[in-house]
Figure (tube, rainbow, N blue to C red):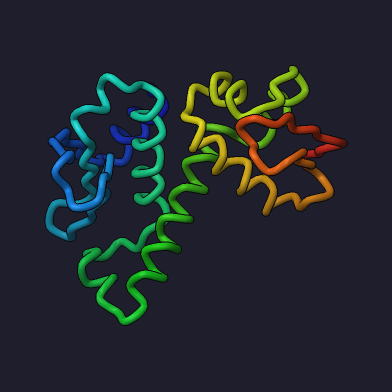
Length: 168
């Protein structure tokens, strides 16, 4: 968490905790950018008691800071392709967050150290299983099927086998 808070301080991102439990969709965090106030992250106040989820949500919201346009988001997202743009924005932020909390070279080391399922890997990196699953998806896209083999379809229950993964 310290590295995340260092970024927030360095980039002058404002963070507020609010009760988001009544939001239309169950969300844990929001990133907003306004030309007048700058970047703002709003996190669900219940995250204080959920360390791993707190860490993952905060990283993803910081990911929006680094990957989103620096214009008022209401203006940036008023096109006919709103859903596509939102999906692309979420994907970019999630990729940034997973790469920040789980760098590829450390991921490979965790595999070499014997962490061969999502639960073990999530424990190793102190993230949620869902977040670890996202990292696996991004890793597979980046390095292809030939570099990382999955046995079975359920990544949370089946062993993963790696072979000759080289990260520069």
